[in-house]
Every structure is written in C-alpha cells, then in structure tokens.
Amino acid sequence: MRLLVLRFSSMGDVALLTPVLHALASEHTNLSITLVTRKVYEPFFYNIPGVEVIGVNVERDYRGITGLYRLYRELRKLGPYNHGIDVHGSLRSRILKFFFRLKPGLEFASIVKGRREKHQQTRRSNKVLTPISHMVERYMHVFERAGFSALPERGPWINPDTHSRQLAKEFLLANQLTRRNNLWIGIAPFAGHTPKMWPLEYVRDLLKIIATRMDATVFLYGGGKKEVSILEEMHSEFSNTVLVAGKLNLEGEMALFLRMHLVLAMDSFNMHLAALLGVNLLSIWGSTHPYSGFGPYGKDESSIIQVPVDQLSCRPCSIFGNRGCYRGDLACMYWIKPEQVFTRIEQSLQLSHENQTNSGAPNV
Image (cartoon, rainbow, N blue to C red; front, side, top):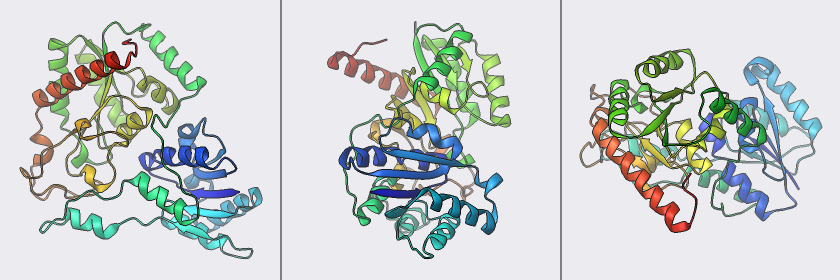
C-alpha cells in the first residue's frame, strides 16, 4: 500500500508531520509513504521506516502551471499510488491534485483547516477561545479519512542522523566546547512576524541577567543576514554566548539542540523543532495563542510564557502573527518582562533536573 503525501511549507508545519508519520509507520508496517516537500526539510524525516522523501525546489525548478505539470509527471512515474494525501491545502497542492485526477485518476483526502473556529478566536469582539485541534491531529484526521488510523506515540519524533550529530560535534570543537561544564541554554529570539517576537531590547536584558546570575553558556540561534547581524552584536557584547546563527545548517542545529539544557524560543519553527526533538522548552507567545492548534507538540502549559487573556482581552488577534497590533503598543509582548522570563527559566531547569533525578537519567 503506497501513499502520496503533499506538504510544501511552512517549515514548522512540515516538521509537525513527523509524529503522524512515525505513528503510521508503527501501526501499518506494510505502508509505503512518498512525501513531497521542500528539499531543505528532508532531515526531519530521517529514520522513519517506510517514508521516502522527494525534496524539491519548487520556486527554482517547478514554477507556474507548466512547472507543476512537470512535477506531476515526474511523481506519476514514481508511482503507482493507492491514495493521495493533501495536508497542505495550498494553491500548489490543489493544482497537483487536479492533474492527478486525470485518467488514471488518484483520489485525495484533504486537510480541513478549521478557518471558522480560528476566526472566532481572533475576532475583536465575542471571541470564542477554546482549544481547537492541534495541527498534528488535523494531519491525522486526513489520513483517517483515507482509511489509515494510528495514535501518535511518545516523542522524540525527530531523530538527527549520524551526519547531523557530527556537524554539531565539529561546531562545538571549533568553539572549544568539548563538554558541558555549566548550563547550556539556547535562545532563538526570532519569528516570521514581529507580533510573535519578544522585543530585542528585552532579549539583551535577559542576557545580562543570565550573565550575572547564572553559570550558563547561551547559544544564539537565527537565520538570514539581518538576524545574523543582530546576533553578532549580542555575541560581541556578552562573553558567555556562542553564535550559532550563520555557522551551522539545519542538520547541525537539530543535533546541537539536543545538547541544550533548555531552549527559549518564540511561536516559531525553532519552538516546534525543540518540542519534536524532546528538548526542555520555554516559548514566548504574543499575538498568537497555543489554543489555535500550533502549540509545542507534546508539551504542556508549563512550557508557555504569555500574558493571560483575562489581563489582555485582545489576545489572540492573529493565527499566524501576520497582522499588525491594533492597540499600537504590542502589549502582549512588552508586558512580559525579562525578570519574569528568567524566573521561568530557573523553574524549568529545576523541574527538568528533578525529573532526571527521579527517572535515574544522567545529568550531563
């Protein structure tokens, strides 16, 4: 039995397929899954039995209708497939589905995004803020409609391979970090949209607090020229920091995350990555809300830092954080103070230490 699965973006949403594919591989040993996504996302799916990843560069190699038709023909040659699964629901995936319905046709089960529920959460008045299905559950429902059910297992769900771990090891050796002699904290202060980002001046204040009150090495994560430039300035200001941004690719960063005692991230890809790797995590939320189905999978509310809705009733005002703040002051982020975040870091590290001690796991 062979499935063709479509999901091209975004990075965090693609990564959230990993619990579903692990569950399906465990429950249906005769199942073969061909996942079509962007090439850069291939490392998420290493070591999942029965999963073949077709990584493509859609903007460069398959642009427009003619490009997608060429992709369709290439995928068709790799078949046949018994079912199609569209967990994206984008224009690109809909066009591909149209082509696959040509004779001989391939039936697709498609994602239901729950736009009505999300609108009720984010409208300015009469909000209905109750938890809706997590993205992982929505993915699972699509496979169920195609006749394949499974229950996601306990994580971690992303398992960096030997090459990824070697990249992280070489990075640490280059920075003269051969072993963890103190706390290692990863900070990923960026997100796709400003309303999901904690103010950078607060990030600097937090780094000051950590430098003076905690024996810790802080690893700074980010990507893109602008983010790297900002983090280079922070790195030059604080001697206890290590600049990861611009130094490691995605594969290396995944394995390096595993070395962290804690990762602090926004509502962003790095949050999803840390959660799926099973890393101790704190995430800061502003204009968005975990109830919208994009919270850190497998984590509970102790991993969330946010202004309570009863204190700031405009939250959430967006599902993806791509709307401007209609208050004009981004209170959802500015009300979260560095001292508060530092306290949560201390509490999370203490709880993690207690859990390791109780389970007998080594504290390394």
